Image (cartoon, rainbow, N blue to C red; front, side, top):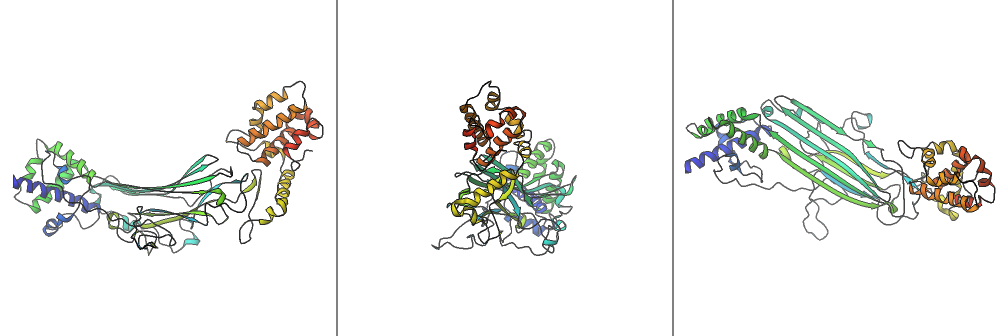
Length: 489
């Protein structure tokens, strides 16, 4: 019994070492007897004991498993890392390795000027363009030659994948945006050879404009998924490798007879499953950070850093954001990129590109709010005078609905134009209902008033009523609602 258990343990150790040796791209498996005898130090997965590859359920107890090292997550230098002790001298461990977030000049304290009722959009941009461009010439690049797996390594199918996604959630208004920052895959196998796929987001401006409120908040959730999946190439290859290993390590062993007919198929299936389980790894990391829009300034941004295992680079890459020791497969993690997430400078109207920023040190046009914000009111009045009614009515509220189409379908519009006689209260109710509905649909106060004016000026259903709205007593309540800054012709 003791000899049987010893044999089973030798077989299990050799099998793990052989497949791990291929996957790690070290020397060809089973190179010499001394190497075979030294494989007892190889450790398997903590969740799968070595005895799991014995289909009969017996065998030696599982080998001891050393936990993986925990290192700091990638961070900009200003962020405290695992190498820097906090003020109280206590050691610190960062729980994430491949991603990091930092808030740059963005506090949760309200700024001096309110951004409520202005529009912005979310922009994500890499600090440096990706690819072969003049601005990043000479930088380290992905080294496909170094990553290429040898003929021995591709006897098993292996797929390494790293994917990082930025999920952005806004509160008031409700908006969710998902931006894949990068995805790196290297697959190899007897039928595949070596195959690489790379996705990198240099910038994203897909966010729609949205209206800010006093309570707008942003939450950034960065998620990294790292997986390494190894599949042995069927029973024949697994048994062949095991047979060769046992012949070298223990020529007189009879253990292989228990893996031969008539139980070969079942045993090989068990080995195949155990190998895949033992040599497959999956890691998920998530970081979340929130900020209030009220604390925004033109310099505000959330900075995201990303690192990747498996990846090789030409030259010398700046790895200070990543762990400095070997990670999966013994390769030092490589920095993939740094991105900044920020608000575009808020603008006054969706119908005009005028914003509130300038080239002063603060980045804001402070004069807009001086002297009772008279310049801000003047800028809005200028937009009202220059933007055309046709442009307003043809603006897309969605991919399939223009402002005009939306208005014509609203009960507050159809019921008003259907009246045979109208009192001043009906005019006021029409404008009030329209302003409320348009603002509820995402327009700010200025733009909702511009839509009401464009309806009155341009829609055929309103032509006979235009004098009442423009100068008549019946329309005085409506004119007061849309304001003097939005004059009618």
